Amino acid sequence: MADLTTKFLGVEVKNPVGVTSCDYGGVERLVRRVAEQGIGWIIAKTVHKIDGPHRWPRPFFYSLRHFGNDLKDSWVGTQMFHNMPYEKWLDEELPKCLKTAKEFDVLFIGSCSGIGADHETWIPFLKDMEERGVPMIELDTGGPHATFGAVDAHKNVGAPLALDPATAAKVTKACVEAVKIPIIFKTTPQCVNTAQVALAIREAGGQAISGNNAFYATWIDHEACTFYGVPASGGASMGRGWQMFSLAKILETTCTVPDMPFIGGGGCYTYDDLARHLMIGCDLVGMCSAIYSRGVGVLSKSITGLNDWMDRKGFKTIKDIPDLRKDYMYLRDWKREGPYMQEITPIVPEFDDEKCNRCGLCETICPYGAITLDKQAGTKPTFDRELCYGCGRCVGDCPTWAVKMIKHDTGEIIWDGRGVIKDWVTDKEGY
Ligand SMILES: Cc1cc2nc3c(=O)[nH]c(=O)nc-3n(C[C@H](O)[C@H](O)[C@H](O)COP(=O)(O)O)c2cc1C
Image (cartoon, rainbow, N blue to C red):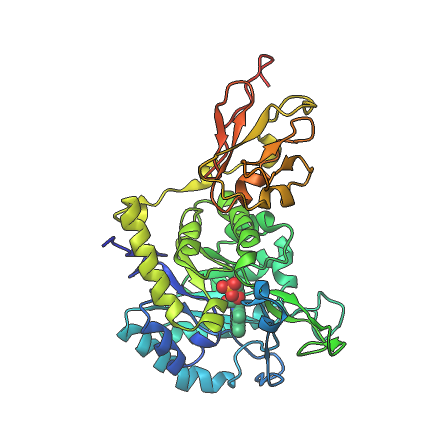
């Protein structure tokens, strides 16, 4: 069994897998439910004083499972912030949460939201939590429910703060100076200049960054010809598919400020999702909506899977997991074929006669109509080099791994559908 222990902001954590801010960190009973699954850390449900306690329009979760299997993990939600009066949470619930977290050796991280750019409004929460023994606090700066300043009453809530580097720096600095415990700035995927925000947070003295928060979204019930759930946009859980976008956003930060501790998450549903995050500079990695759509057992299952993966790969400790950030680059710097694309592709597909099950998917999906499968003859697919663009789509889609991309002239394999394509551009002109 691999050793999953790690350190975050100087604190020992029994494993890097945890639960990002949501109901599960809101009350002791739910903290216990997820702590029992073996997590290493949890972030509390965000507390606030905006408009008093939020009881939310009930019901507040609108699963999209009925709209197609590809949406089974996706949903829209209209809950927002903690639903308990702040003082009640602070005096009654927080001490119980801290006690239970300690019982299970789980790092408990606070979470709060002031009113946007008004830095003074964040500080009382920090002081209250520090006084009660919360070891570090996340600023929920990127909530999905903000209206981007269109409506006066909403303009200072959530995302606007995390979209502007100067405002993010101002609030971070005020918070860092107000307390002795570390401050973690949570980013939003709705931010287009993530790297600038990351630099601003570091400059302001923020001790760590986390991301990503949820999106906002809406849905239409096409049979009822109405909105679905709520006639507005709510917080959106995009399911596992959005992980690829979230990973790219995370890399914007972890490559820009590689020295800063980072809590990653966004679309994690399985052990390999966790592994991906640990390879791109995340010190901790969190799950959230997966627990809602798959149950609390998804946590222990993923932790076990992560352990098995480490054993399989020979990684004895978290530090042995490779850091892929050194290979990450701007796509425009990727070596290209030359100053122009050759008219006839030098890279072509090769079909493995034995592995091919003659399903014809490659013929169906080839964007350029270059592949033909003669089902009557029962032979493997063929392609027309005049039509083929050498795009590689057939490699990634083949269900039996029967296609590879090779150099037409030499037969050298360029990509077999695993890992990164080979750096093959070495023609005489040195392109
Ligand atoms: C039901 C629910 C409640 C959430 N509440 C909060 C919150 O109070 N504060 C916060 O910072 N993020 C909150 N989030 C965002 C999550 O912590 C997480 O950043 C986001 O959902 C992306 O991760 P995921 O794809 O694993 O769900 C909430 C998410 C969900 C699904």
